[in-house]
Amino acid sequence: MSKPRNLKVFSGNANIPLAQAIVDYLGIPLGKATVTSFPDGETFVKIDENVRDQDIFIVQPTSTPTNQNLMELLIMIDAARRASADRITAVIPFYGYARQDRKDQPRVPITAKLVANLLVAAGAYRVLTMDLHAQQIQGFFDIPVDHLYAAPVFYNYLKAKNLDNLVVVSPDVGGMKLAASYSQMLNAGLAIVTKKRLSATSVESGFLVGEVKDKDVLLVDDITETAGTITAAARLLKKEGAKRIFAGISHALLGELAVSRLKGSDIDELITTNSTPVQPIEGFNMKVLSVAEILGEAIHRIHSGESVSSLFNIDNKKSF
Image (tube, rainbow, N blue to C red; front, side, top):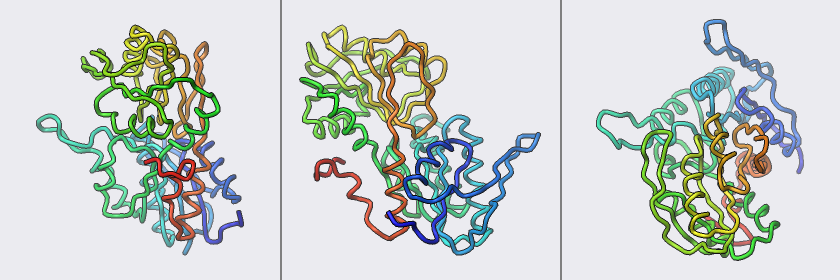
């Protein structure tokens, strides 16, 4: 790839290794910026190089600590805009607050829309994101949104494993569309586990629709934080006779509760991406796949005015 002109990529503190991998793919250095905090917690940003009339991409997933990372992103966008950048694209591999996308209770906000408004108000020209929790969030923006999928990365890894008699399972009703897409992509069977949420950190699996006995199973979901849903589903699948259970999760935000649950679960391997920083779990089999190349290629195509839709293709077929 020839070195792009007038293109600069910056990163907040949320996932610097991913940003570095992206610029390595693009063949350019990571932009220089100071992103620190004052003693009282306020975020300070200074762009340490000229960005006038440049095409700027700021890589910053809004994962834990969510509010800190979101403020860093907003302030970096504002700093670049006030430094006369030509275009500013917010590259958000994981879009925080995406689960607050509707009013499902009285007197609650739609925070996913609020975050969209904040990004536009800060000066973002475009948003590049991946595996949104709810695809309708794209409609919350009045600026272009390029929505990528981690599916091609998962496909290459899973194909190499030569899984036999595979069934793709959604751990809840809301994930059926995602599971159906993976099922079609992998030429696999399809099943669903129903669940009942007991609290914000606890769920109970109900029953299984589909056949998993003596079959390899791939549980797919866009995000796990406490691992309650996938571990409860895995427990039921093992009870129903599943042979091996793999979990394919785009964004793994694993806290102490999730680590504890995964260690004691029936999941043979958790497959996730580096859209957010992921720490290894001692005594548990986990594979972290890189999305740097697909994000880097999307940045290159956006900068060059090319289509990004072909990035959804797998074996020359559209996967999503």
